[in-house]
Length: 112
Length: 119
Image (cartoon, one colour):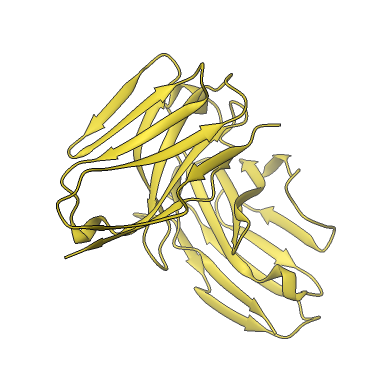
């Protein structure tokens, strides 16, 4: 059974710092891995999707890497801003049908 | 519509009452998913629809939970005889199709959720 774990559960950093969020999964036979952002009281917004054949994906100040063999992904946020404050979730599909297995999330606070 | 719409946004009910949560997916999206987000439990899959049929309802916690979808559009999640442990945010998502998720061809778009509090 696939399990997804995120560390740390919470993170507080001063504005401008570079930071790394970690995601690990127990079954390396994944199709892809997706990072989401969730603001309080809002739904999930997809940030990056990495296919199993890819090593990393970049979007602006965000860079996500994937190491299938070790069952790990990292989300790197460069030059963090207060607007980056949110909960970040990673997820992998359990099959080809969109049923996603989520980690419990990392709640990030970026202080001005 | 432009996005996935869920109602009500907040629902407070008494233990033992029935509740209905509604999801209006993006127009043209044939696949619809229900997830539950509980404190300390993270986000868990409940059920998904492809059209009006539900190929996977393995995540429904008990027989008090049911969902239906009509006309390939709006879906209703019903919880009967609510219990305090049902308190959570219920999230709905839709995608163009339930197939091809592995290729990234169909990305899920989530609604803002319905927060259910059972007193």
